[in-house]
Length: 356
Image (cartoon, rainbow, N blue to C red; front, side, top):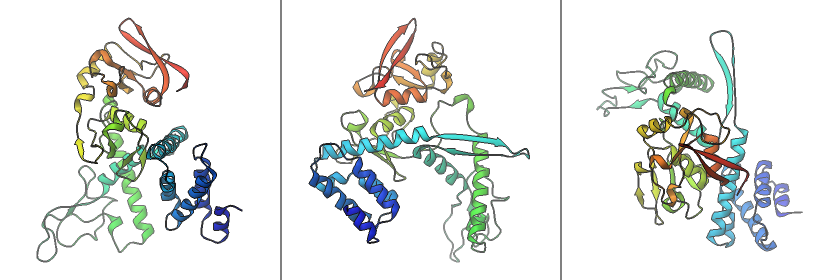
């Protein structure tokens, strides 16, 4: 019986933890010595003590570091695990919605973690109360508590049992007089209302523009330009493959925290890397759809890709910009073989059936 099996029988591992360990061991690089694999199993069992399945899965991606493998091997293995998880998440994405016939619609969606965390941050920011003003001698605040602009202070999301002193009352889910279930329902209701407000304010005529909310992604400059392979991390505790970090960076107006080898912030802007709205208007006179062969996604829904990659010295010039839909942009950033064919003023992207 394996070490993991014995640990499970002893009650040291849950079924979910066993699944994480088995999956992690099966994903180890080929050619490892048996004693190295056994050492990884011991380390994973030890890591499981005090860590739930989610944290264990994250730590398992670098288990080779615990058994003395070179950092390059560890980085490459972690990058492969994160990239594989991102690809699987992308394939699992889904959405459905139906009309209830009573003035409401109901649906469900599944999206990759980065997209979900972005939406969650937007709704949390809209619905969470903000404290402003210094506390007075009696503990009250001169300006009271307030909710985020646009979300309103009254209605189903507010409760009369608020903060001490005058001012706007706290939301219902902060009311200690309500049961946990009632507080949960109140918060869900409020965030549903905020989602409706958010959808009503989406810039549908500029869907290609920068996102309204920011999830901080931390990476190194060498990884951003493709010199090395190290996964990036978000401020929500998730990891992104180098390719996904570069794809997100192509759409962002700001790369919030690019670090050098000593983790010193050296670049917080790099606006010259990104195509401007004026350049997009000029490209719109050349392209009406995604530049990939056979793709009919409208130009307004595309992202501008550097034909000669920015990381290799490509310039953010009009002649170097190619509009690609999210799917084809992702394919190129994932390493799909492709070549460019010039047809008049347009450049057409021919993609191979398999990727490198």
